[in-house]
Length: 379
Image (tube, rainbow, N blue to C red):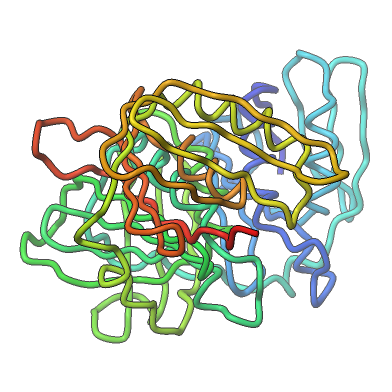
């Protein structure tokens, strides 16, 4: 196996593929990254990583002199390519060693037994495509609301509902719920299915998305495909698959209030900056308190002998004056993921969930992003 490749393109493909490699592999061979040039005519290098749950594949154009395949330590290769000088990379295999040369830098890697490496799963059946940049934004908006508690797998995933030409992304950790609605182009116009996708895998893939479209492939217990309980994404020569979380998701729509006692129309950026400043004196268990009147909101944190902060900001408020408290980070996760310059904060009562949305594109329309957050009890 021997090829020559652009340094930046090679580094991008290696770094992206390395994300799927386990930090502590169950067996040593899973720490490997497979590099394969199927034939010299195609001049394409395929890189892949797999841990029996998540697979990642990337393709990059090379000048191939000899076809072949090799398995090398993936994380080490990723560390190497990030530090290479700006020169073309030459890579070739000699026996049990792989040699990488870039400018005056030269590295020798010991290879891993390729015959022990598992076969990557095939992509399930493609069910549609979505604008890559919109999909990436939607994932970013809901991802903070997923839980890190592995004892409740359902809360560690993002729930995707595919219904007609709409995708609904939802996530919750029991203290907040984030929901984003977006348009996509399904292969079947009457599609109505869902999938609970591990948040980490979805987040890693979405960060690589730029322009164009992302193809979505799905295989569930009630669909036809190359395996059950799997979802795949493909974009710009990169593809990933992951097993779905085998759990029912919460019925979240009923958790959103339909009637409100008060509403605030707030500037997103100034309010977010004010919350960040005031929260400097709040520890993890201390809330930020917001007191709304007809023309302003007063933000406070800290009390008694502790450090204290107070700041006032002009807002438009409708309803009886209200004083409510939030975990500052939870509140910011909703506010800063609103895409419009102004946001609506809707309240039922100081002890009931509040809802944050952006300004709808059309007057009277439905916002694309909704964020429900539980308040904290006021002292």
